[in-house]
Amino acid sequence: MHVANHKMTEYNFQQAVERTRKVLDKYDPRQLSVHSVLPAAVMILFVERRDFPHLIFTKRTDTVETHKGQISFPGGVKDLQDENLLDTATRETFEEVGIQPERINILGQLDDFFTVTDFVVTPFAGYIDTEFQYKINTREVAQILEVPLSVFLQDNDFEIKKWEHQGATYDVFFYHYQNQIIWGATAYILNRFIDTVFGYNPAPHAVIRDPRNDHYLRENLNRRSNK
Image 1 (cartoon, rainbow, N blue to C red):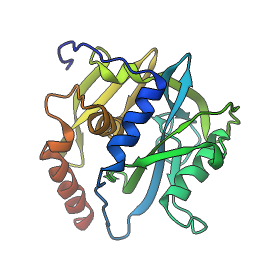
Image 2 (image 1 turned 30 degrees about the vertical axis):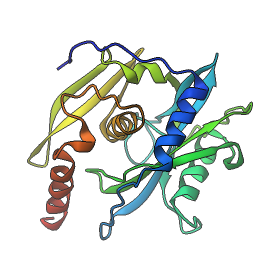
Image 3 (image 1 turned 60 degrees about the vertical axis):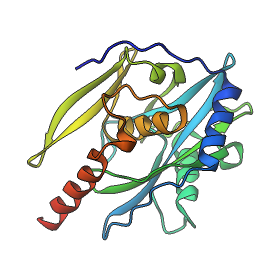
Image 4 (image 1 turned 90 degrees about the vertical axis):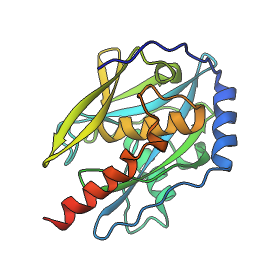
């Protein structure tokens, strides 16, 4: 279903970065520890295009192990070599799209997200303020998308669908951009980021304050214990 139109608030690049920094400096992210679940991390990255903030996404190839063909933030599973999850996020960003860790200015950390595919994903936000060139890992990444922040600050391109997974029904978020669809865990993490930092949520109930958060976590834990 689509929800009613909402007037968008416009941010230039610097405003978006400073607002994100200010909010996340004071934010206490929810951290989850789930036994025998793979820890992973992603980067929510701002890049400036004609003075406006864009977010970087990757479209996965059809040959990767999980989430084939889906759109995601740069990131992946924690390796033994990673000292922490921030290392994971920046390393994976470099390996996938060639952006060196030293070019990324970190703005903060957001709530962990427990996916139905058994990952606990830790999102980090950051920005790039220097010139750079992508170097795509073609085994993992089919395409890079730079999506204007403004797309996520209005509801014209937002949709919610009911989705059944292993006997439970969830609200699944979809963001449409040109001929691409951002959905699933990426859309959920994105939705929580926009709500947390910019105070806007196109869903009928703000996810951060919605009991579906805890309900979703309990459902996933119950699903694992019943395997």
